[in-house]
Image 1 (tube, one colour):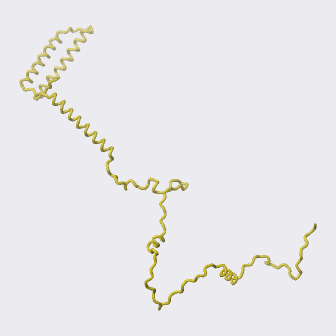
Image 2 (cartoon, rainbow, N blue to C red; image 1 turned 180 degrees about the horizontal axis):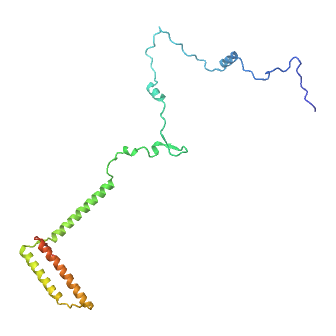
Image 3 (cartoon, rainbow, N blue to C red; image 1 turned 120 degrees about the horizontal axis):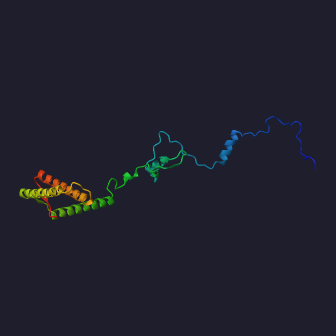
Amino acid sequence: MGPAKVELPPPEKYLKKHSKEPKLPDNTQCSQNLRKNCTCVAKKPEVPARTDKPPMGIRTNRNFIKTTECSVPKKPQPISVDSYKGHKQPLENSGLVPKYIKKKDFGEIPEYLRQRSEEERRAQEEYEDFVREQREQAAMKRLSDEERQAVLEGLKKNWDTLLHEYQGLSLVTDTLSKKARKQHLEEAMDELEKEIDLLQRFKTCFITDH
């Protein structure tokens, strides 16, 4: 119990300034320690003199071309930054590199479009053949001048008959039957007038068998 009993330094060895600070070893001591710890005992050959002849016939298995290629530093991989936070990805997978132009079938029409065009062309040919057959079956016949004149006279005669019936109608149309009869005669006379006008204006006329 009590304070520790330690040996006190004598008064001649008083504490001096910077006495407790660590001191670096001397340069000579460091060089000696390095020589002791160094494991590389083999020395490099001396530089040949100017008068020395170069050695001849020496062969080696070292590939200097491959060594030179391997010594070239690799190029950095191109990347694409797609956000303001700095998110990046390889440029090749970003969709910005036009890799599709390197395909073998680039610029060629796809097979399904060729089939669709062929089907459309075949359908158009079938439709044209059908229309041609219908035209041949319903071939139109040209009317001669005598026949055209006879048809024209017949239409005029029918128009005169309808006109005579129209003039014989009562002036007072107070019933539904009288109104319907008058309207029917007017429509028939208008239709005959159109047909007569066509036959008079056009000298060449065609009719079908139907």
